[in-house]
Each structure stands twice: as C-alpha cells, then as structure tokens.
Picture 1 (cartoon, one colour):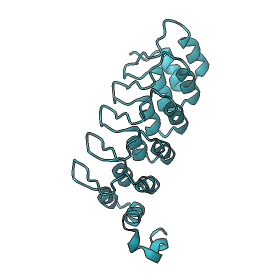
Picture 2: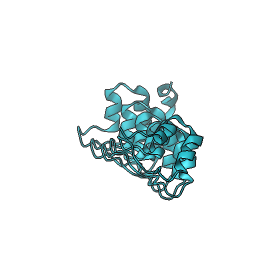
Picture 3: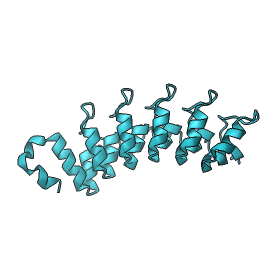
Picture 4: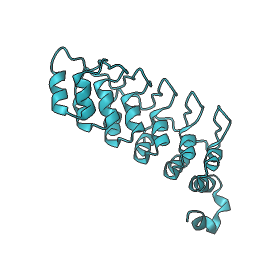
Length: 213
C-alpha cells in the first residue's frame, strides 16, 4: 500500500533504523506513502523529535511537502497535534512557510493549533512576523480566534485578543457568526468573559474579579 519500512520507522520513532535506511540509495526521503505522508510528515504527526531532527539535517528533504489526503505540511501536523518541539525545529528552517494553509480546509498552522487548544504552539506562531493571526480558512471563513472561541479555549482566545491585528468581531463566511457568538452558542462562559473584557474593558471597572471567578 506504499507504507514502507522507512515510514514505519518514522511512525514509531526508530531513529537509528530510519537513518540507516536513508543512507541507502534506494530510499527516497521525500517518497510518500499511500496517503502522501513522507518520513518527515509521519515523524511530525507523531511527535518523534529525534527523527524530525535527523531528517531535517539532510539537505535532500523537502520540509514543506504536503500530504495528498489532507493537504497538510509537517508543520501543520505538528501544530495540530501540539508537538511544540517539532514545531520549533520546523520554524527554525528558512524553507518552511509558517503560514502555509492546507489544501482541504485552508487552515493555517495557527488555525490548527487554535482549534486544538495548543497554547504553547499558538504562542510560538504568534511570535513570528510572517504569520497572519487573523487569516480565515477558505472552507468556513473562520479565523483562529473563531475556532478557539468555538472550542472554548480561553487561554488561546486571550492571546489572540491581545493582538492589535486581530479583529475580535470578524464573522465567518458560512453562517456570519462572530467569535463571541460561537462562544455563547456552545456555552463557553469563560471565553465570553475574556472576549467582553478585552473588547469592552471599560464596563468591568472593579468587577473584573467577579467575571473571572
């Protein structure tokens, strides 16, 4: 099915075996399996940091190659699954686009991290000057803030709202719902409080403690 021994070694984090196989000329480091996952993709998806490091040290690897099933880069997989060490290594590469949207939903690595509530990854991506923090996906038109609010992650929501380049009232293109609407829809009172406080801080005055307890 195209899932070879080298893909299995990356999947399981067997760095010595993966390295030995890559040293053999018949093994192509960029060869995809049946779902379009390369050695690096599987290592990034699974959080196998040693394999990721070993593969990135080789000059014949494309670190920004998307899989054919979901259209995600290794960085997007690392961000989606919360593997901060993998994300850090990939972001240090000059040939990795930190704002590369997938081909299925059009979500950036930041959106994937926000959806899953991986605040450490969100923080790393927001520190980049080449990441658009308010970039909406192409399928639903939802921003990272909208996804974080909908899933009730107040920590990520707060980080995004502290940015001057994030529109807290941007409606999605599917239903026209704002991040605050999404949070209220699913009963995420903590996110609602954070959003109201960040958008309208003057109405809180001395009652801030009440809303956050």
